[in-house]
Image 1: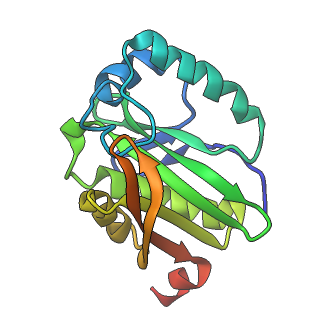
Image 2: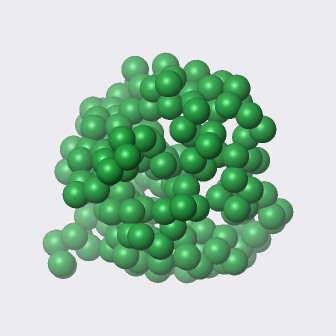
Image 3: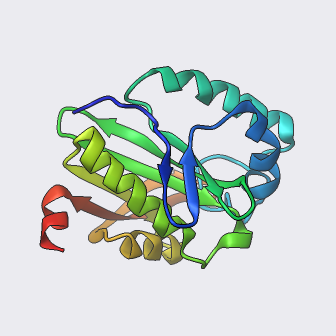
Length: 185
């Protein structure tokens, strides 16, 4: 496994980049304060921009670690972040990563998150050298599963009562892509 850290990735409509402290305002207003966005996540909506700023103050120093991967999802059209995507669990021993993501409700259903997820998966396979990239969603949040499918992940199965989010204990639906899946395309 290589340790290139979080590098900028560009897609047709997005720039995936490191967070900056000045993103706190956008983070708060565009997605972090919205209870609908955080409904199936593990963290509560931010109460104010100070909470978003504190989160970024925690994340930004971690960029010095080459095995830390966390991107602001910036929409080129408006030059501001509208969401985030990150490796939430890295297992170097088997070369696998679990991904978490969220995006402003205003941009749901436009194919932006599958575009970001696909780009991050390509980076993790090609630059980092991982063998497996996975993600899960609450069984009651199938739209997140569609993001995974559109990005090319395959359904693995449901782990009953395996997760906890803002709704409580939940069944997790897992999707993944392994290196050999890419060769099949």
